[in-house]
Length: 242
Ligand SMILES: O=P(O)(O)OC[C@H]1O[C@H](O[C@H]2O[C@H](CO)[C@@H](O)[C@H](O)[C@H]2O)[C@H](O)[C@@H](O)[C@@H]1O
View: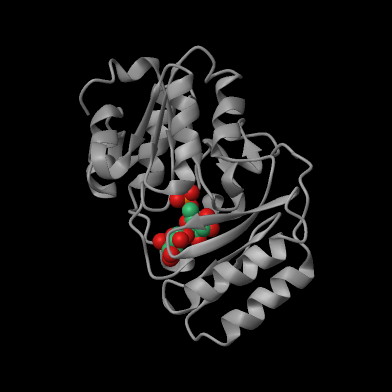
């Protein structure tokens, strides 16, 4: 990738869905290339640990898809685990009322293909396989959030609407990561594909780094993975991580 300077000074902050892996029909149908976890592990080693996946996904999903000890921020910054070997930090954010989720589930039940994904503090209404449900879901969730707009906000994602607590975002995750070793003092490079990534990109730029939109800088997750593979040390014998 042109113009970023030596990779060794960077702190890499990578979105997951649509950036490291291609978008799939459902959240659980995402395909992780078998070499990706090992590649991220090697890159993290190369950067003395200054690599984090910063995702809207819960940490449990990230651990499932990427079973390697790297820093992670999940739930759009609401779950932060800067030290891969320590428990996640507890940001004390509010939890969306069960009644809101029940109303959303009732709407999803009327639209075959729509589904609800639970998060630690909120939930997502996915309509990729039920596109007609999108506007109705947006209206319903906006009306629910209007009951407590100081605590929750509605986030537009790719063919999905997410009820998210205020007080955390990919921007807050980037700030928190960059304020501590091994990220501190490095040049943040945030790479994402979605509107939900813009706050992360903005903070990376504000800190003197780069906020890159995958579509403009790489074109596709496969091209990004190739670039990361070139930046990483080669795998050890039989594909093991050195
Ligand atoms: O921040 P990210 O790592 O990009 O996560 C954003 C959301 O990604 C997932 O949903 C999206 O990807 C699904 C699988 O490709 C796709 O089916 C769905 O339509 C997309 O919205 C994930 O399910 C969410 O929890 C993340 O917040």
